[in-house]
Amino acid sequence: MAKTRNYKSIGVKLPLAYSEEFGPYSMFTDPLKALKQDFKNLMLTNPGERVMNSDFGAGLGHFLFENKTNETIDNINAAVYGQTAKYLPPIQVLNVDAVFVGNLLRIQIKYFIPDLGLADTLDLNIKDNNIGTI
Image 1 (tube, rainbow, N blue to C red):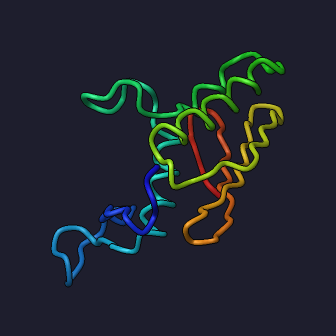
Image 2: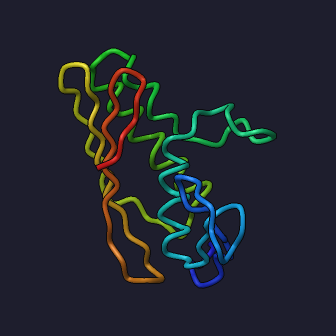
């Protein structure tokens, strides 16, 4: 299992912006910030969207257009837990709370990074093919 202290990701800060230090794109090298951004990207990427890795991504945006049933909630949970375990083992998902409110899908993912002793939450609001984070 990968450890965070060995997590060598250098991330480009989003949204893209010019940096005097790094040049064309502002970047960070902090493993915690890299993990948080990588986790958010994993949740928002659709399967088939990443070149040469068609399995990557939880595709949470697509669930907005599914039937609002317990089975859909179960599929959201399976996507979050499965993708995280496969692609970001330094992160432990603690709880996934998905709720349909009219034309809005709210997903709250509580997670823990054991190597850092840090718990955090990723909040996503998905509406009309637009995804926002709180």
